[in-house]
Each structure stands twice: as C-alpha cells, then as structure tokens.
Length: 137
Image 1 (tube, rainbow, N blue to C red):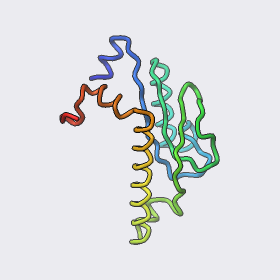
Image 2: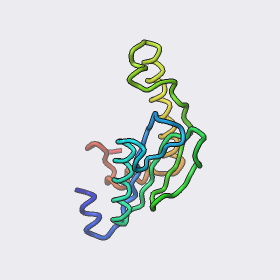
Image 3: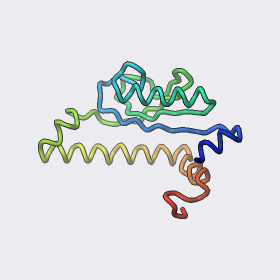
C-alpha cells in the first residue's frame, strides 16, 4: 500500500534487493543466469522503468567489480566466502549444516553493516513512519 501511495504522489522509491547467491563466481542477478537471478533482475528492471532507484546487494567472489550499473540497476557486492558446495548438499551432514548456518549469519552481519554504513536503516525507519512490523523503533 505504501508503494502505491508513493507512486501516486509521484515520489521515487529507493529499493534494495538482497540477492544471496551461492552460485558460480562471476554470475550476477541478470536475465539468463538462472531462474532466481532472472526474477530478481526483471523485478529490479521493472522498478527502474517505473522511475525508482534500485540497488541489488549481492555476494562478491572477487570476479566482478565492487560496484557497477547495468540497465539503470546499481549493483553493490559485499565480501562473502564461497560455500564449498550447494546448500542442499551441505544440509546432509552436521558439519555442512553448521557451515551453511555460519555463512548465512556472516552474510546477514555484513549486510547489516553495509546498511548502517550507508545510513539506510534510518531511511527505512523513516519510510515506515517509525514502525517496523507494527512496533515503534
């Protein structure tokens, strides 16, 4: 509802997609790079076409630039280790499951740090009128 209200008033939204891909280093959230990256890309592209500022935050495996813009979409990459195997393979052993959970926590911490550095958390709170999930923040 907030998005429709903002668009009706002609306001531009700042949209952040967090794309945590375990895929091949060098792949981006772009059409043709797999089903999930393709969906993320087209949602972002559509949002840009509607006049919004869109950023995709994804893992940096060292194969792509830290920041770039493609089709009006800003890509920012945060350092994150490449998992030794796909998640569905890792959950078959206690060691693999531990590695997967640690990795998810690591990416969440790095994402949170990025949001704080860019002062985006305050913008989010302001955007939701000081309430997130119905609670005052």
